Image 1: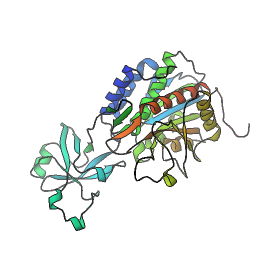
Image 2: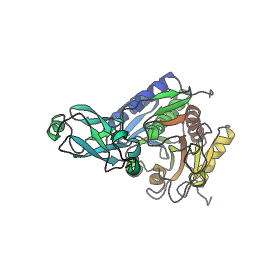
Image 3: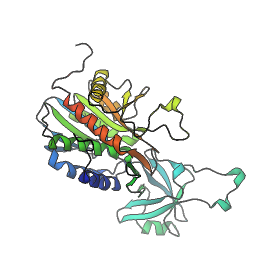
Image 4: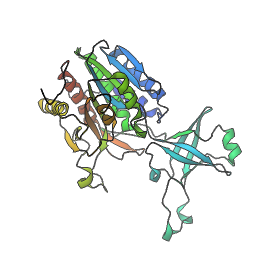
Length: 361
């Protein structure tokens, strides 16, 4: 394959896919964009009750391999409306309360998007000796309403979901920046694997289930459900992981990973070692740079859901290093994106129909 595998159509899709809001529990519009892009490259689609989307190549095969990312993004819910028309919120996923003040938000209602802002007291009015930090119970949204009745007239009610509108851009030629790179990039990268298989006329000896799961941010729920439905033999999961080279991160506890240095391959109990060895051997054979990460009891990703589903599924995790996770300026390196795609693509070509990855053979 050529050094650069992302083309103009790929980037156009990525921008459209990222700019669309897909908060946990409301992923379907993003899934439609994703499936529309994949139509020329796959044989059929599977969707489930909660919105997970699966594009399938060679669906009649009995041996099944999953490549997976998750589709949802962090957000907020309206939890309380004050008499003065201010909105108080609770998390939908791991939303960071510290970045909220002064951010513009989109409140999703049946009448359409209502704009708002996370307000915060001016520096002049705060007690500098006892400054109160932003916390989940003191951040609030102002939508310009004078009272609760006006809020409700605008279509805003308890339970409305709230997202950030920050959109995709490219920083210094090779850094992709946006909210929701965690983990819309996963859905993008597995879609690009399907495109390459089709364009390079590769025939796989197994069924490939390109899976874009929902509700990862609140406990791997979508992956749990779809794993039971597909019942795969193998799962290669892609997610993001922390770039630990930026300030205020302790490498001794968080490990050593940096954007631009390649995909991060996980070592963890949920990661099946022979499958992981196939991936690292593939990387070395094709001179794909990679990094390693040791994870403890759980990976905290959909890998755990697939690995422990049914009677156990040989699973591995390939992560994309990312800066500023769960903020609106998440950042990844284009070369890492391309190398994750290459690594999954080449690893699939090394999996044989019927591989058990058993330690006892």
